[in-house]
Image 1 (cartoon, rainbow, N blue to C red):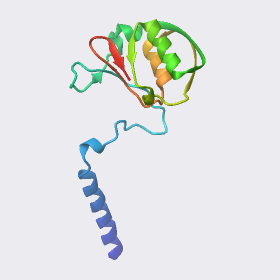
Image 2 (image 1 turned 180 degrees about the vertical axis):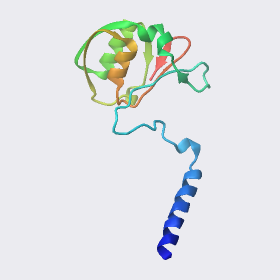
Image 3 (image 1 turned 180 degrees about the horizontal axis):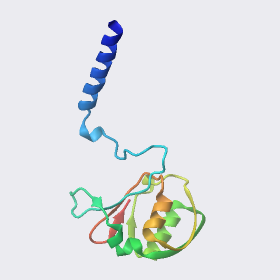
Image 4 (image 1 turned 45 degrees about the horizontal axis):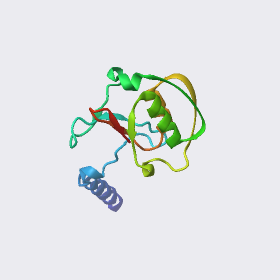
Amino acid sequence: MMLMYRVASSALVLALAMTVVPHGATAQYAGDPTQPRAPRFLLAMAERSKPVPVDLARSAVLRRRLSLAFDGATLKQALAEISRQAGLSLVYADDVLPAGALVNLRAGRITVAAALTDVLLDAGVDIVFTPEGRATL
């Protein structure tokens, strides 16, 4: 009887704890932590609005084709080259990128979206676009 009471009490405490967790305390990405985390492509229509997913099929800049050859390039160098070839204004703070990350990628005719996904895989960043064409990590 006492064991059953403890199990029921534990379940009740767990249920209550889950209901009082503040909404802001939930994880930003609730995927499987053992799987690679790709960056999301988002659009912020106004300064204070919540960004929404970009429709990749309708984004000319993200569908643009590039030719890339990175052999041990730094992440910063790779992003600069992708930005240059895509004609994209990409803004980020150095501290948002993983320190010491190197990029190895050889691709002819890769889309901007695929290139950014490849080089930013597991970097823990998303790409937020503005209507003016600026992209921020």
